[in-house]
View 1 (cartoon, rainbow, N blue to C red):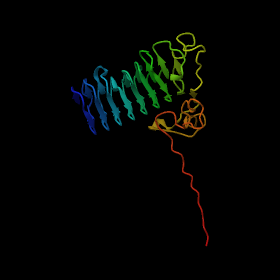
View 2 (view 1 turned 60 degrees about the horizontal axis):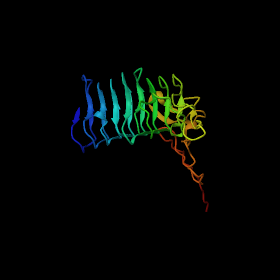
View 3 (view 1 turned 60 degrees about the vertical axis):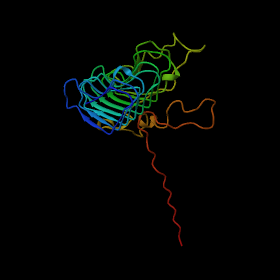
View 4 (view 1 turned 30 degrees about the vertical axis):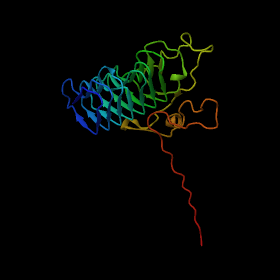
Length: 277
């Protein structure tokens, strides 16, 4: 693949096929301040797009990663609008690490591997509006708890373990309240609901914003269409329901964002006016 050893690179519009070569990585960066955009990386055995040592300021955006058979598909400080799919024997779909890291509006689907995480975070990270579908392990895992973590408006669907979990017994918090769960093998939330320790303020927070579905929210997830359907108790419950809809102070305005990465498209209203002469 491509080995970047200095800072300040902008890597764009490459198609890198590692062809299953032993210990192969698509794009390997041992430096900071690099951006990877509009690239496709396939058939790696070590890592897809990898930011060695979690150096700061590494952006991966608008990329497709598929066919990998080991390691992590994306390791970055910011991962946005990427499609990670159909990989085997994986460890992690997307790892975001370091202060002020973000994973947003990514689709991570069909990640085989008993312990495969959809998203792995360590500290100071924001994980919002991702669609995580059919991964072998936990949908999103907080590996090292510190302050400044937000996990909201993600879809955790058909995960082989918990939907969302942490290595510490975290208190319930609005920072990670408001995600969607369906058909996960383990409990939907694990180690992120404590009301007995580390709570902030006088009254412990109680989770109220999660959406527990009764059916698959996608149009055809089994056929790689992760758009939201309009079925009650499924995709309809994810539409225009991102948490929290009301801004602080209860103003007259609110948002109508969908949960997950793929936003629905409303049918146009067509008014036919016939003017006769």
